Length: 93
Image (cartoon, rainbow, N blue to C red):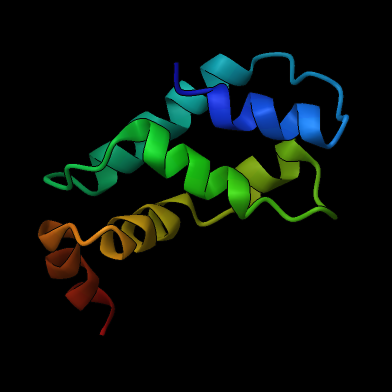
């Protein structure tokens, strides 16, 4: 289940449950894998990375709406040594 990292972070922060967390995360996941094809990064790994970067000062809705989720996906993949991510990252230089 892709929502595990965010559910754990919501519980840690004692934040109320997000009404459609699973749907929101599924949509976000589809967005990043469509925008950056060919990067074989596990969804759980990425979402744990994303959840760990959720600022304490932001609501989950604000974070998921305003985070540069594709950039963070690419950064996570590069940090995990996925070579195809490095090829995508050259687009930024």
